[in-house]
Image 1 (cartoon, helix red, strand yellow):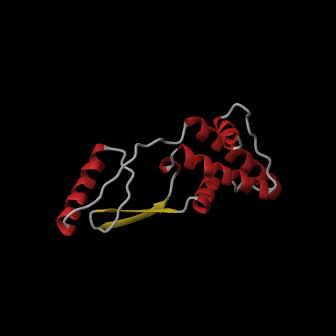
Image 2: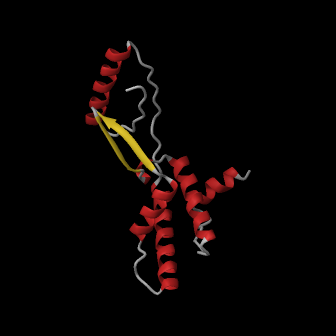
Image 3: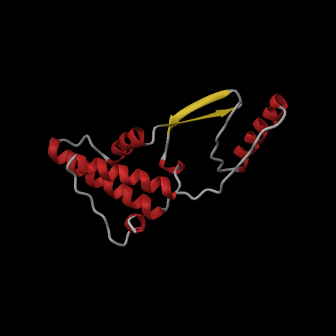
Length: 144
């Protein structure tokens, strides 16, 4: 292991990472470790995102005269398009999975939502932007 980046959300996973760090010290003599406290996306951000998924699925289904677009499908499409994959190593196993909203902090979630908003605009979908939402408050703060 030459480099690793982990999101640790449980003591059990922390123990596994500590073992890997110990192995890295044995292999390389020393390692550098830095960490930051998590600041997960907020529930209001998540609620607005899922509202947008509903609005987009309704509009895409209306246009296509179909019912194949649902919130979960659009969630997967947009996460795949804008977030990509997350690769991590547990022991000697490397795992790659689609990055999830739960992996994002508030700032990353805001940036993702800006990308989703642009996607909707490019596809002619009008989304709701509640004036008192955390999303709009962050937009206003950015524009100052």
